Image (cartoon, rainbow, N blue to C red; front, side):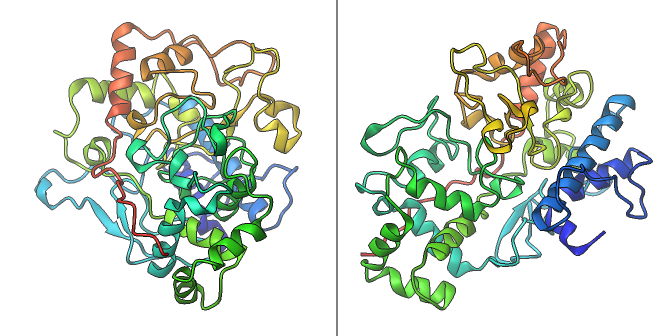
Length: 412
């Protein structure tokens, strides 16, 4: 496997899991499935092609082979030797790529998907944190990144759709920033290839932060004298559009959640989950087959699926299709993480499902029928108790501690 493949945590997980399932298309020697032919064999496209191929192969494994009840979405952590005292179970490990970052149990400390052109440093994170909370980045000084991605609200705004400058409403719910570094692409439709691209997009969106161009933002930040030394320290150069994006992305890469009750249970702390949560876990990986889409350490395949949400509207949101122009992507949206899911209601790209119970009902009936419904959406025929257990398992994915951040003092 090439070195570049090591920089996609989901690919590593898919490959390792496929090996554990004895899937012949992905051998322990490192051979990998054939990538989709419509993706070019270069850089980021090759990474995504391999990731997609591995997950397709793994999905086949999961649907054709019985899973042990203790099968973990994070093969990195095995069921621990119960002779070892639970008190010794670490809640985090330090990142290999950025040794100052704590990576919670359940995530891979060897890979935070940090790009080679933006190494993670404390100086960038400090600067990015200030920029993230600074409303002066918006055209009228009223909106910051934290307005829609608020640490106090699950790193979202807990609204069906978000509002920008002059109280303008967008068309989609704000995705959480939690573990966003583990996503292959950003936004509900994947229109941003990196966190750096994602950080820059809202600055010039007329509904969100409303600036006419990035140069306007750069000049405004340059005019704040106390910001300049922070840029010099972080990048050894002045304020630029690229450095603003890199700094915000660096901060966002440190917003991590893990060490949930589920993570501790699968690592050997058998008292971490109750009977209902364990039953829900077995449903999640078994009968309900949630890992068709909610796969990997982040419980997301980073792929796009049509669940039928909003497809009955006169002009439905076209989702991923707007980016890919592929017919199969009409009405398809990226699979969100389930980690800290209790804090990010309402759910779906349009906030149309108010509760986890409503979400489970949607899946139980096989989604909302439409021409482009994902073929993975099939009725589950769950009993009331099974539905309750599934919800309780998802609640067991809340991180401990929750990644709460106190807004910093801003440069003047």
